[in-house]
Length: 318
Image (cartoon, rainbow, N blue to C red; front, side, top):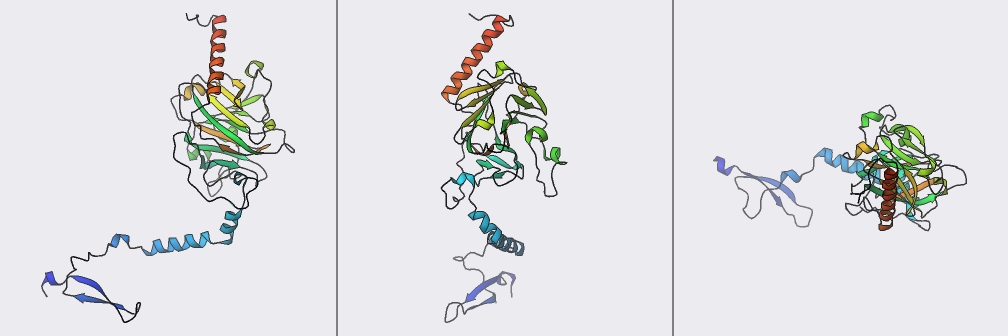
């Protein structure tokens, strides 16, 4: 046959009943213009089929079924079954926990907004996926306490910011599958956190005790946090850390070592979940403090300016 007549076509021959037909290979008849040739790119390879079968088997395993039926703190106290997995809306003010940057003793909710160590004997660190947004007054984020237990522990969470290092920086702390245990104040070289047993901060691995001027309302102790309490942290461009509890200024850690050099870099929210604080979740206020917090920040800056004028560091502006 001439080459133009040697086109191959698969033409199904239909039997008397559906499903009884067989396919025949016909030579010499080109494809009909009303029926384009099949798209080979959509045909699945054997490797793809095996992967889909393996995924289905994994989802239907007893362990996966138990995991779906497990009720976690973020489902609510009266929950009878876990909520369906839903993707959080994409928003510039959204904050999510990074599944790759958390201790194996910290469990995340399906939407990665909540974190908890309630199912483990001890806690660990958890870091945000998105960097904290930069505003004129600084960088700000908030968490809400979901579960706490002060019956066994005298300390609580650590809250702060950190520069996200490369994974190689933690190669001596990870196991054979790449997960790690521990806390941000110990594992992250560039981290600045407040909290723990109160009255001190952990800045770049070093402990710094806060002064009375930095805690004008007394020592803030994270063990006093209860479910429903709101904790916010503001990082100013000149390296101060202002911590708010229920929109009340509790800690003013001034000139935190090296923090002022991070203004032109991306920094991430980081938590050390342990002690009395068992479960928390991010509020979608990345970089968006409330008006009350902004007014408290303005009062703090005014008091700082007046103190510099009194010490002769700067001249008074008229």
